[in-house]
Length: 148
Image (cartoon, rainbow, N blue to C red):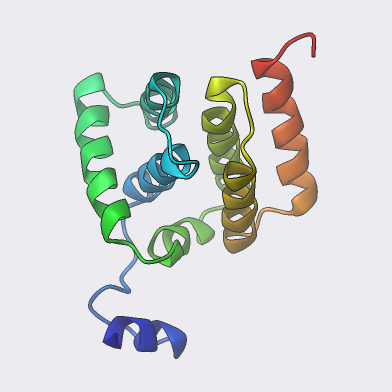
């Protein structure tokens, strides 16, 4: 309860410290894959692939990161701990994170409304405009569903 009150008033508490960018991104991607209640193998594979490519990690490092991200996501009550770390990045990096999120959304060639809502909320929290978020969504949709 203290943590929630401290966050409300902008004070530091035991859980309000920001976390590493890689872990923040991984935790958001893991949460995104779970948000519709079903994590499909292609979503998990996409998360591993985008983390490996984006952060230039080995498959072993990605697996460890995803395990840690899953633990952090399970303990989180909101996205603040993750988005606070990402909001400080430059615009291109923040846009890149939203692009990664759309890749995970469209890994199964579908955009569930809960996934869409989560990307919208994260984009708002890290300062990516609605216009850029929508452009990225359309790009990733086209890539995932060519000819549709």
